[in-house]
Amino acid sequence: MAEGRRTEGTNNRAETSDDAVDEQTAVQLVYRPQSADTLVGLRVRERIKRTGLLLRGVFLALWVGHWLLSAVGRGSIDVVSTVLVLFVVLVVWGYPRLQAAHVQRIIGWQGEYHATVSAAGLACRNDHSSLVQKWSVFQGYRETAGHFVLLSRDPNIMCLDVLPKRGVHEAGDLDRLRAILDQHTTRV
Image (cartoon, rainbow, N blue to C red; front, side, top):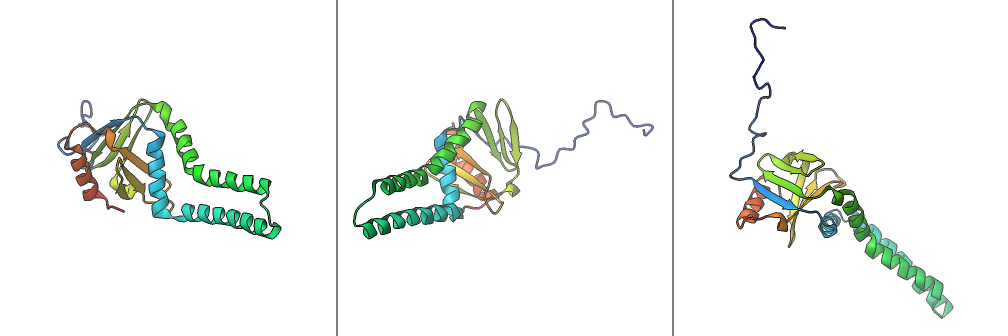
């Protein structure tokens, strides 16, 4: 212990400019996550990554091709193979919706989300957790009609943040949010 130093009543935490949130430029969003929000995020991820979309398309094409070849070879349509092809079509179409519903079961019970987007990054909290992400985590964002989707930097884009525009409550906040995103990350 160093003599002559008093540490009582001092703030040992050095506050940096990255830690401080500028209340003038920060944008607040308050929303309850919905399955449709996650579905939008998954669709954006699919369009950028394209691997899952390609694999599902090839899988579907193989099943339909097999069904067509067997129908032509027999000269008639088999009921069992037709039902199987319809099932595969339903699974391929419904897979993103099943994923979105699963994510909703995981996060939906946590209630209302409060997100703050600022020059420091994205801070999100609810009654059960809080998460702060710096801009270096994101490779970019994409804007849709009702959402801003932030995509993680990892090659598989395993994490994404969906900010629904309905969460903004002041008139000019969407333009400020777009300006913050443009300043700290790129559109993809």
